[in-house]
Length: 398
Ligand code: PGA
Ligand code: ZN
Image (cartoon, rainbow, N blue to C red; front, side, top):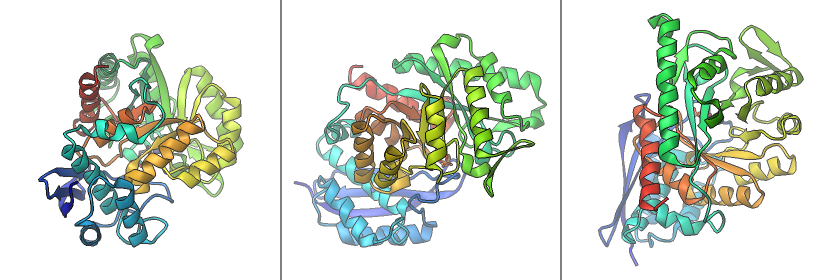
């Protein structure tokens, strides 16, 4: 037995130099847990709301008043107390950022109380996928959309090494990124490329196919690597139409465009291909591309009821898991468990505004997620997630 004695927060800066929250939880047995909270830029409309720092700190103070004296190992009870006290659909009163910070820090304190790593503590909380292999790495090497000052409207161009051996996957990702950097430096003026928000390259050319051509050239062994896209299509959707470079598409035309590039570049996965309420367009594309991963992110926002809706409409076969999108660890776990029960693959994901915290790697591994999406493999805040996953597989003898 170990009771929470304090929950405190302070301001730190994220990868975009924006203020975010660092939360510390302490117990009467001197166990401690922390969480550095990440933040999105291309956020779904139904996500848990991240409050500005002063308000989030006030929310955290209220959470502390509520949870001090409670048993640290009772994760679902503590999360439920926060959900009830918040009382809103999108965590806008206490703040999704304050709540997820407290929730993850509580899990870390409980793990430390047990002398366990976070992934070891989390593993028994998911009855399924106990023997799943380590996750595939979804590495975003070319950044566009809301994550870049210029370039393609499509937000992410990912390489996905086709191996569950994390050391090998990292080596493939790093080598591909190094080739890509050389290639881009040869072909573009220094003023026409820069680092995007997720550590990949942003390139000053709106052509949405150019990044796929560059990646094709950068990869040495095409059999060992597949490509994925996160269109984040909300960001180029206006009044029922999609704008990609100088082309305006209807939903049907955009669907055909995806089908063409899927075949041309033998793609593997496609995240948020349409606007976040269009369950039907996702479902139609999934029928045409039956062996591709059709992935929900803004569509599902890590929420059980949104996932249930996507299952009923047969919109997706994979979904992004972002704990701060929903606001508590318990709800994150419930969504993962529902997905796995329904045969839907999960991909645990960082945010575009990241911190040095690596809890997402522990979650990806503990729950047997199919993927870990954490940006470019040599960018500071991103690489730490991949290194943590490598450390976890070593500790766990994988
Ligand atoms: P975000 O982007 O963190 O800016 O929301 C990541 C994503 O869309 O997957
Ligand atoms: Zn996304």
